[in-house]
Image (cartoon, rainbow, N blue to C red):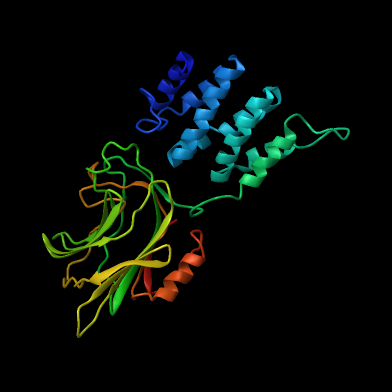
Length: 339
């Protein structure tokens, strides 16, 4: 049974009743510092209960990792390491490994190395345990840099207008993404958009989620078009590389081919060509043109590439093999949206 102190600490952290599935996002960054100071005066059992759960919510959400990074939690914990119990030290080292694999500053890294420096041939207290933090630092999943979408109304990236869509014989959209929902309440109701490229008349291209499925849409006139369901079960909090290939065929039906992590998972006929002279002035990453709370993406999105050709399976497999941190050399054959 959770102790009153545990409930009080986590009430402050998440701004309400704590629930590991429904309400686990840290709302007040300063409450993290208050928590570390408070735990110095608590017994070992209470500290263990609170720190173990804190590591669990760090693993569940990148937003919690980012918030903890912004308040300098790594430095706060390292400065307290020499005074903690052995059991608490194990829990803190586990948490430090999770944080360091996400982000660590030069100052924090110097502090970590200083705590490994022995005197007279004797290791400092807990120094050997801290070595495991160095082992976890390179174990990073996903792109080195990415856009973080909080899932709030209007929290999207508005792109400058595109005068003409880049297609001749087809085009390919490629990106890495990770769904990071705030909770499981509205998973079946929300329709978060991965991207949306449309004109002011509502025609163009988009992709949005319904549950764990991705729906690719091509609107040739307002309210009329084609949709294709990518037959793949996308799981929350896991990185995927998605490649959507539109292939133009002059003498037969045009096609759409969808790849996940370099492998073909779904394909079909799709008359994708949108015949318009209007500029694409409603272009968004992580949202539809309305940018309302039920249409914004909640999670992380890597660099987005729109190639002005239909990439073949070997090319897509090669891009995936290069990994999520790879940056394509910019040229005139595609648009690039990234950091």
